[in-house]
Image: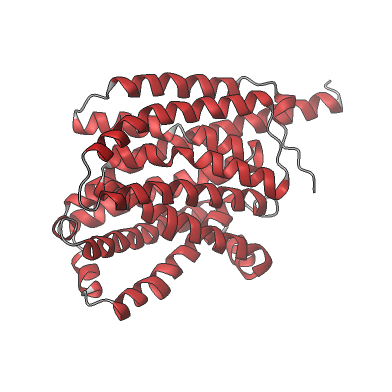
Length: 344
């Protein structure tokens, strides 16, 4: 018969491994999301407006992001229904001292990060968008350390650093090429990449704190409830009031077969990606969860290569090797070193 200490060690080991599994599942779905997230730009009416003026382009990105948020929320409601957690969702959303943090995270993860990612996809391309946000674990881990003293071991820090260096190896050559041959509004795509990195990093740090006292499945649904509210009742009405464009007409024109198919596929990928992301934080911490989820950059480039029949450049291979090495360093760390220790 196992002793109490052995049972605790076994439970800790299972929790840590499941944290890594959830983070890797997040990375896979996140990488896959860039396929429908890019394809929707090539459907009418978005394909026409995306190549017009800067203001029309921003409006198009806003409409796509708003519809994407709705699709994610729909998939999460289905998920909660399957799990039988609708009642828990209602109880948690009424407890404002908890739900307010998810609403705050929605601001950084939606109008900042997701919108920025769509900007990067539309103006620079999916490869750039996928890799541009790879710096977000640095933001999340730094804030987690600052806000609630989440400790990261030396081995985990080295693993994070190696993963980020791998992302930089993939990102920098494309950025240098873009800077050497700039387009009129390419800065919007570059800005979008930075918005994604900072937005998802900040959201992860916020979620890592509030998930100590709430259920991840319920929490992520509340977070997207907040984002849909922001888009439909704050941002889109402001665009209608202060712009001359027919935003409502564009939204209605978007309700055709192929745009809806791509948006629903993107919503499903991103919804369950977010579920896995949030589940990993309480198990292995924000810094480690975000670093392992940063594998999404590798998966994204692989999926893009498969669907576009475009082979990756040599620097992608280097980035891939470094990312695998960094993840292995973290995954093979002793379980006792992976406990989440916070000084409250």
